[in-house]
Image (cartoon, helix red, strand yellow):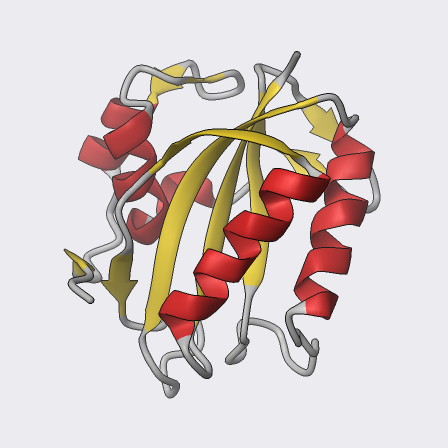
Length: 161
């Protein structure tokens, strides 16, 4: 079965509890969670006048197609209270598909690998924790190499509950 890497994040309400609920929903609706990174706290990226985010990367074994994964995580986001008001705005939960095996996919609704992951330290640091040698199929670089080359200087610190 394919492995999909998901980035979980949120900066509203009880962030810790929301990420825990997201993992529970994913385990039931998407597939078996094989690995989970630690939780990391990061200042908002893109639109910076908002609360800090908690982020985590998980590896999931799934029987779903990429499009089914996207549809399912959108439903999970909605179930957990996500309302899409503004691009890069505050949100209760955000679940992004980073990789789906080594698939390269570009449709109107979905791009895999995630097109911005190499520019985001808050994505790369937890990814490297669980999959340091994972190769980016477009850039032909490991997650570790991408983190070493990342120019994003936002601090990504381990979250201690």
